[in-house]
Each structure stands twice: as structure tokens, then as C-alpha cells.
Length: 372
Image 1 (cartoon, rainbow, N blue to C red):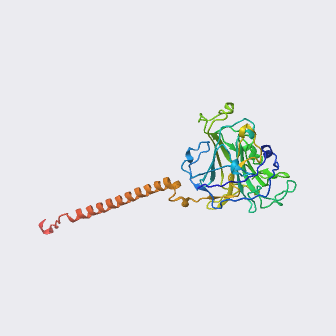
Image 2: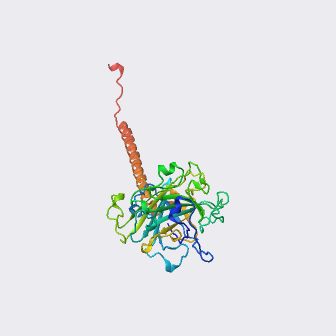
Image 3: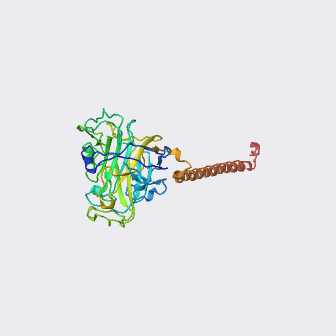
């Protein structure tokens, strides 16, 4: 069951994703957070269910929660996102973990202008000392943050800005960027980053001093977007941009996947473990009233880490998520039992007939040799 409260991210402007550091953000007053510690996300074990295509039909039987979106830096109720609520679902198949994020909002798209299009991000705790507030919470500034001075404050970030992404097409990790050993995506800007605080954030495989030159650093995410107002379902090409008229009512749909475990050697990726719990949250940007969004102007779903439980298969017995699987196994077991009983009955019958026939054969005495 996915249940989430209001989260605070402090991400930065779009352009800085490609160059490392992010723009500064400022908060007014002392930060305080009252979150529900019982709220959790569950990634159910459901193999062979999801196809990353931007369509949410196959998610219909997966548990979800809807929640309001409030500004991250000023989470007042009267400033709630007016477009609508967000729905989050998650599952895994034993190898990859999948996320579905849906946001009710009017269609808005401007090709090549990321901050005039919706954008979504997931963030996860890596280091044990990484706080949710201030993206890891390292106290160093942009001139002194390093993997040593901020050790233990690492957070993992996936950010998808759709300004150059065709709906229904996959983006994220690709041979060109992964071959250069970084978490970039030159095609659709679905990037893989890590952070120690809002002023110290970098693409995987890069650092304050430049590229890490480590082949294990790469973009492990795949993702796709869609909007429910689209009338074409077979797919789009770039020449068909903007794909629909601005202002159409509907829902943005984002699907993402990533291996539970990655080849990361640099403490830049969260590592999910089946049966264990990690920490996460989600953020959303939207060009309200046609105005470009800015880095710290996002909406969030909690003001603290939200636990995500990576369920094991046996934990689903009796739940709605395992009904089909359990029913299939029950039918197969019953059929096997019937066949076994039938085979036993046939064996007993054949044995009985053989012995019964032997007992009914008349006795014929041997003729004396003297009578020959």
C-alpha cells in the first residue's frame, strides 16, 4: 500500500543538471516538520505485470494512495497545487523496481523548453546520515563539499524533464552517455544524480573535481511519459509536437524502472534489497499560468523521508496482489490431486481384476501317465 505525506525537496534549476552544482535556494524562518511516521510505500512483488509505455492500464490492481501537493519550501494548505492530486504506485519483479506517478493537471508542453513543461523527480536516501530536508543535509558549501567532507549524506535522485521527450518513448540510460561514465541523458533529460545538499549535486560519475573516470557510473533509470488527453495510442514522433492542445483536461502519467541493485562503486545509487526498507519521496514541477517553473518552486508529498518496503513474494499470500497467482496454483494442485487419485483407483481395479480372474480358472488335474 502506497501511503505518502507531504515531502520537501530542494532541487535546483534545470540547466544545472548537466553541469553539476545547483542554484541556491533560501528558506524563511526555522524549518519544522510534522510527518506521519506510520505512512509507508510498499513495492509489491508482481513479476511480469508492467510494460514501460506510459499507459497505466496494467497498474489497475496495484494498491495506491492519492495525496495533495504542497509547495516544498512553504507547505501551506492554501497554496496547494490547483491542478489536482498525485497518485503513486510501486512494484518489483525480483530484478527491477517500477514506479507509477500520476498527476491530475491540464496539458502543458513547449518543445525544447524544459521549465515550461511538467517535470517529476524521485529521491532516495543513500547515506545513513542523509536527511530529507536539504537533500542530504551536509553542512559544507559548494566550495568544500567532497565525498569525504560530506560522507554519509548522499542521496540518490532521478529527474525527468519532458521538454525534449516524445510521449510514449523510452528515455534514461543509453549507450552514449553510459559509455562516457555518467548519469546523463542527452536525448530526453531523464537523468541520474546524487547530492549532499542543495548546493552540491552532480550527475552520477561526476564530482566537484570533474569526471570520476569510473565505468560503474551510469544512468540506471528508464522512463516514459504520457497524458490522458492524447487521442493517439500507437505512438508519436517528434514532428507531431506538441502532441495535443495546451489546456486540455487530463492526467500526466510517468512510469519509471531501475534494477534493484546497480553496479555503482561510488556511493551514488541507492541499493534496494528484497525484504528490506529504504527511504524515498517524490516532487513535481508545473508551469502554472504558462509561466516557467524554477528549481526550488516544486510541489512535494512529505516533509520527511517516507519508508518504502520492498516486499518478498510470500508476503503477498492472501492479499489482492497475489489472488491470481494463488488461484492458479490452487487449481493446478487440485488437478494434480485428481489425477493421482484416478491413477491409484485404476491401479487397484487392474490388480483386483487380475487376481479375481486367476481365482476363477477351473482346476484341471493332470492325466495319469498310465492312461496314455
